[in-house]
Image (cartoon, rainbow, N blue to C red; front, top):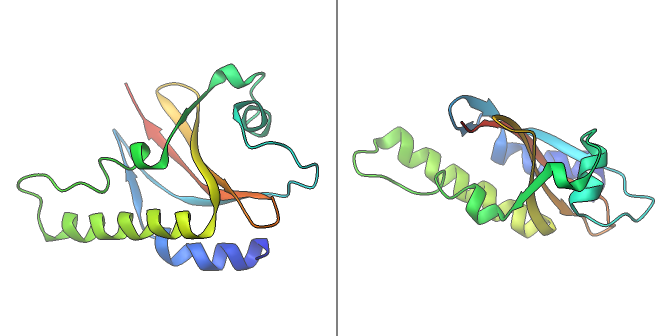
Length: 134
């Protein structure tokens, strides 16, 4: 699947969905042509994010990153219930489409989160969003 096909496949799952934190941020498609066959790790993502070393990148699982997005809480209304379903579908589609998915977080407080995995051809793809953690 090439970059355009992959974006077309994922877009219906993230379009209009907001990552909830202290601010609500949209998701953007992210793609990196990995013709150099680089490993998908903190050092590589640091380079892509303009950081000096992988020590500036924190890594977490997709399940952990979406933990509050896919959980219903007492008192959640119909809108929130629908949002939970959308996040579960997005998570499932990412896992079906990409391998080795991890979330790479750059910076502190206003954090750029890269939800990245590998395509069948070895390129890196996924989503990028902002989360605020204070």
